[in-house]
Image (cartoon, rainbow, N blue to C red):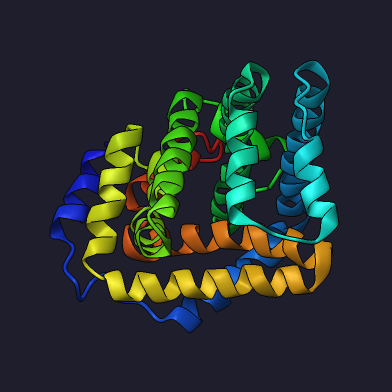
Amino acid sequence: MNQEVQNKIDQLTSEKTKFSTNEIVNKSWNLFGKIALYAIVAVVVYFALSYLFSTLLTLVLPVDQTELMYMLESGSFDFDELSEISMTMMNESNYRLTIIINFLLTCLITPIIYGVVYLAYKADHNQNVEFGDIFYAYKNGLFPKTFLLSMVSTILMYISAVFCFVPFFILSTLMMLSVPFVLFSNASTMKAIGASFKVVGKNFGGFFMMLIVMILILLLGLLMCCVGFLAAYPLIYVIMYVLYKEIIGFESQDKVEIESSTTNNPYI
């Protein structure tokens, strides 16, 4: 991890991690307006690939879902019957293989969504945003980290969801800054997650309230049908960026950029 970022984390106190939820959302919304087109394209690409992979898996590894479809079409829900059907499907090798492959493919394309955080960074620093920036998390040696982050996040969220929603909400809150830490601090996946835990832990209540706001934004987007959700989903990642910027900042990165532009100026 970048030493300056590590020093900043070590010096943080609960007071320094406080923020105004309304202010963060307002800043995020204004920043999102600058990258809305590219951010929405990133979400569309992500879900299009997800649908494509899922369809191809169904064709290559067909699974008999007749009983499940019959139960759903009948309108009657029986938990015991659903469990029995699920166990029967799990015994099929195709079904187990489909779950594993689908999990890996999902982790493979998730860094596309992480690219929204980088889009926010460029727009916030008055840099030209390009279509290729959507795939930033695959470049500069970041892909192994972002791929692993996607895997770890998915596994942890699934396990926490199994143990009811309280652990899920707690874990979602603690990992809120893991993506920007991976993208901007030169940290490994596990160190980025650990850094997120450490920072959020100093103001867990504030970050938890922000998580509730994020969930409300997603719900509002769903109520506005597909168009609303396509905007709401990337907005969540812009909020993550703004939180990281407000608490950790980009002093070292900005300094390097200023020195570089000064050195390359032919008129000096």
